[in-house]
Image 1 (cartoon, rainbow, N blue to C red):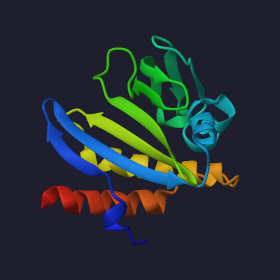
Image 2 (image 1 turned 120 degrees about the vertical axis):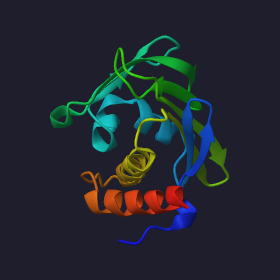
Image 3 (image 1 turned 180 degrees about the vertical axis):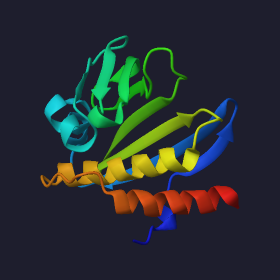
Image 4 (image 1 turned 90 degrees about the vertical axis):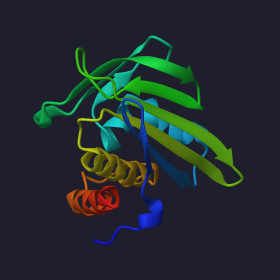
Length: 166
């Protein structure tokens, strides 16, 4: 599978690691995308089973089952239908803030996803994983959920590795 380099996240080195910025446009309202980001039934279709308490200081709890990954972190930013942030980590793990921002477009919605990745983690793998989950989100929003797209993940990881090596 070919990866469109133009669609890859913008990665910058920041103090304490890296920042990756993704953007996707959807033919859905911000409210529909917000529901996919926050409602348990929708989360399970593209990310993982779990819940997000929709308030500052609430908790994001996601369980990736067989992988052993369990996210359990406080919600640090919250503005309904617009902004949500929590850490992609469990208690005692390094902070990996994940910030979702929604903006209305004339005929849909722009989703911006910003990740902060610790310096000792595999940036290409993290970004490729989010590329795959964003592909799953797009499918779920169209009403045709898909399983984790491993081929897309591998192609994106290779593209990110090549970009980071240059």
